[in-house]
Length: 136
Length: 230
Image (cartoon, rainbow over all chains, first blue to last red; front, side, top):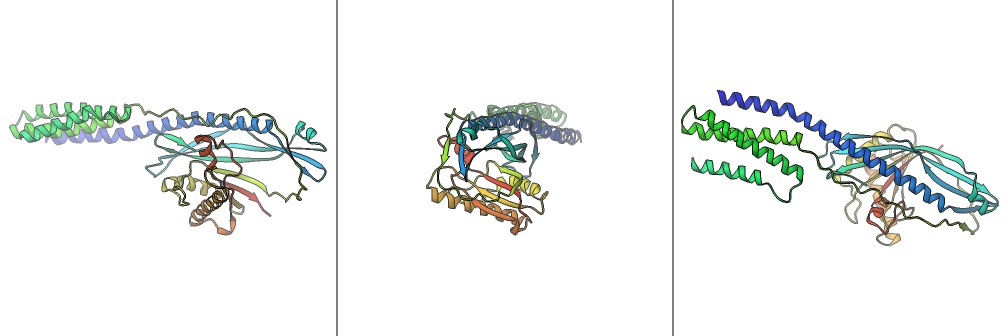
């Protein structure tokens, strides 16, 4: 009688604590995704710099055209729990990608600019969390 | 009776010692479970002492089992998750400014359809040299399906890319086959096939340095472009 009472109490406590454990794990994963995003956005801005330093010129009719891609400095992110044991979370990162163009009669002028914004659209990157890390 | 006792202590010792190769968190959980088992076993014996010898043994086994369960749960909660430091996305090497002039007679530029939305699927892995998607990446594709359903009237270009390992022609074919796999998955999820167009770029348009492992990982990707194609 006493034993089964103690067992019931212990199991009830365990069942009560389990969701708390999951919530804490989710918070940790979310934190790791925020850290990951900071690095990811930094690398995109590095890529933008490299693109600007390595402009390619295309001659179309009498014009030289130069295009480069830029990325917004603001971004948002979220994580979602999945039903898959091997990939328990996915991370979603949202930012904007922008295309800038410069047209001129010589390529020297074209790379000098000014650059005008010709396209600006939202980008969503989806990452998977597997074996304790964000995969890409 | 002795055998039962022995078995219990063997289990407890095994739990307590843990496996040397285990992660820190798993070891911590096992230790909590072992501590719980010892305490539960003790409590079980104490309660069982009120009855006969059989009760003592039974009590210690039940006590150890429930103690281990509770200790394990508490360990799961309080042992810190060990998230290995993430390798930051590759730092790009400085590149000397360079201007490339395209001297060939230019072709008239086709009207580029306006991009409404871009989706990049990262970490999508296919079996080596194959195009079948591993089930662990279904959640990534399912999320993409949700986003694409927000643009029911728009066309979607599915672009496959590979790293530079392999010949260019082979990689083009492989990237196309992979893009087709993704298209089939999307169609099975209810997206109209006439909305979906596939393109395989192989190792073309790299976004990472193919000389590094990290760069090659970034280059193996699938992108969706939702376009205004009116």
